[in-house]
Length: 408
Figure (cartoon, rainbow, N blue to C red):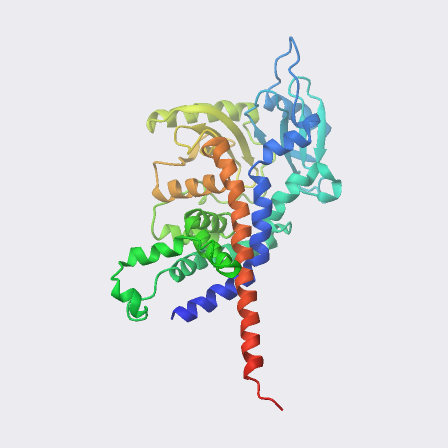
């Protein structure tokens, strides 16, 4: 059985190698996505305060921009305007627009309403303006959108299973198979396993490489599992949620609301009225569930279902960097339809929120960003050392076959 697991681990690693290296390298940069964007593109990511002028609200900016982009819909409005930063908008094609949008992300000066830049998010053909978004697309979908997400979802699922196989292979052999010398010392199982956590720095290049792979995998195992299983959550939801649902409870946030026969383009509540309604509903929810609201994040309109979703950062979120507390309501009547509380309501949602926040470095600030970035390098290192182990054993097997080959 152990030899079978060795074969599974070996060839699984070879199949996943390129995917894991790509994910590790791109993940190193994505951990600092916003910081790198501001450093590379300060002209449109950063703004100087205008003396005597107050910021134009994000909703008002969306109204101003709608006349300039009549072919688009401003269905998602980022309400949180950080000091010194431009306000960004993601556009969606208006129903009936068969040509699509030239650009779908706009950056605006919140003091003047001036459009600073626009881009087709992730389209590397536009040049360096899309470098970070393109790396993001590579990381999450191989820059192949739905097909790439599906492929990486399968890769993540295999990686998750291989995490357990790899861990099992580090366990010490049973006493029956252990050497007579080791049996005579009567070492405990944990004592013998502790050797797998160490690197024999004086053992030669091959042993160092093997130990780095084995010990590195053990020391990083917990975070490797977080990356693998949360990647399934991102890319293969049809697998992740049934598995989690078999163990943990989960909230159903608007999943049972049917889609309308045709999109509702002009609901009774415009975005200003919807914002007032969302704030009032969220205030009631916060009182009923005893949590505090830190700041509002976004309001999203789903024309297909005729609903608004109002999202805030609250004490139920895993950190002030992650905003997922939400209320959904009917876009015509304002009737509350669903509430989502990231933590403390359903164990499955709490676990999922922590997994996703750890993967995206949305907790514990800069130290976590550095750690996640370093983990990207760790994934690359484990992959490379694993391939080197395979190459060495492959050469050894070839040499043995050559020596056994009868002379003619």
